[in-house]
Image 1 (cartoon, one colour):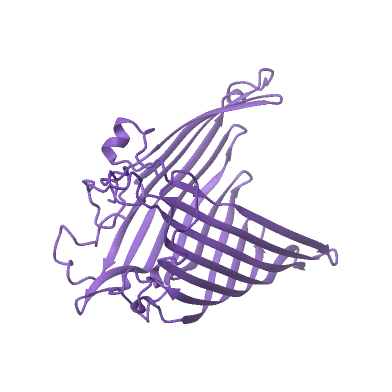
Image 2 (cartoon, one colour):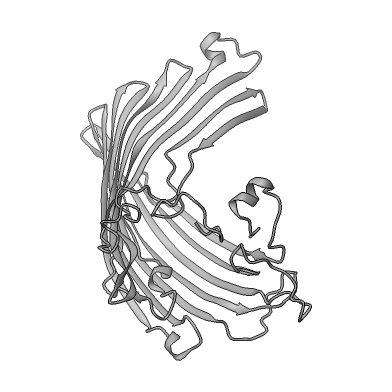
Length: 409
């Protein structure tokens, strides 16, 4: 909340034009795990958990190019905005593991169920104090926006490890999800600001498989494939204004992820992992204009693909077997990523090369991430030095190059 433009950040990243902005997120997390070995080959694990938290902020949230200053008429600062979220989330998971002989190999079957309930109470746009400290008291007890969100989730899953010979291992799995979401509240205090109470239920089946083939005693090839989905979020189901329309048939995002690689050790001093990946992301959500009004619906898709690699060399083991003076390892982690929109069905901008989203880069997806470093170990002492470099990213789907005055792009 420092309130800096890009230029101000370059000049002095420690300055702030929003000294009255505060943020606090207290939370409590509890968990209880029960492990029971039923038989030699069958085990049971039950884990229950809960999270109780809040997210509180108070501050002057006007655009960065609007100065937070004292009003000469009132001799006071402007009233700050208060936003408060309260979260109550809890659930439990039961997992069984069974081992059995199939031929000469011991196979493993894992299965279980999960139950979860989440509650979010969101209060925003409250009129707070004109002071400068962390004060969440409202001058008007009515928030400008108040929403209640509820989620109930039941799931069942199963996976199996199959061994074929001494080299090949295959792990298929599947998961069934039942998700129920509901929302209620208002987005502004006018009669038009009340939203229709809505409950949405969906049933999702996810599946996938992984495989590992031992090439040598110290290395293996691996491959994985899994389907995925991303539920429509609360913010996407909440209109930002009374004129915005939410598609009642909006779908959850879906897709799949696949990867393939080779990993292992060479001799006693080189560890490596080289892999490629492909991520398909369908039913992305965006905004179009329909009948003269903003309409939020599924309009896009993206593809992310690339290469990831890791290598670590122990110089002491490579040059000598004498570890009298400890171990020195050099490592490098490199990722090259190509993440672009493959589809964006908005007729209003489809033919405009300056506005069209298709073939533009996905937000916050750098073209590369590199990490280089060294680790030295001697008895109980260890020290690591690391250098990181990450490519620049776009923050909007249009891939805007120049920042606007308010620094929102």
